[in-house]
Length: 242
Image (tube, rainbow, N blue to C red):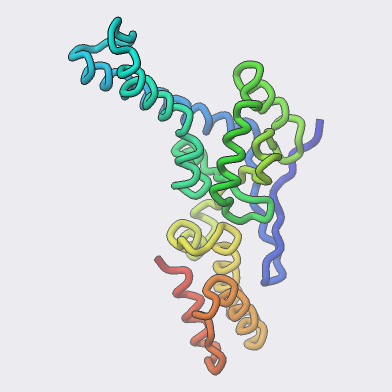
């Protein structure tokens, strides 16, 4: 059995590796259980509400007549809520679900960035394999055996789960990571790191790094060819604001 890696290391433009701690089987299972209870309750709530609206009374079983209409208005939406919970919320919440957020973890790519909708859908399609034979037997076994706690879905989509940085790390990092939609987790940490180290860097180095960061995330909007270092820093600080 392999020892889990302490974190996902990603090279940054500052020359300092960004470390994203990898989430292990325990915290992943904890997040999954929270999400499982939420989606089960939502599906049951729709089933009961739909049955009440359709039959005029609470009933879990299908009526003797008009079973196809009951299936389309009650059973099908309940199943959709249950099975589409993870892919829909991970896309909308940028690699998170309520359970993952409660556990302080999120889905990222192998490079540390935010995964696209395609990758998130792929990792969720492979839940069908990970859930075999029962109780996510395949997925749990793979998470225990692989160094980065990967299940089949992660291997297929090129993703993994990492811990989000704690608030205590840095006020700037908190602002960038939690409120700036244009930055992925690695970008948020790079911006925060550069702002924290600004005074310790020589002027030429900090301007060069600021230019590289702004051009990466803002493109043409970062064109300040004649700007001094105060303008570069001001633009960088704007990137770290909501």
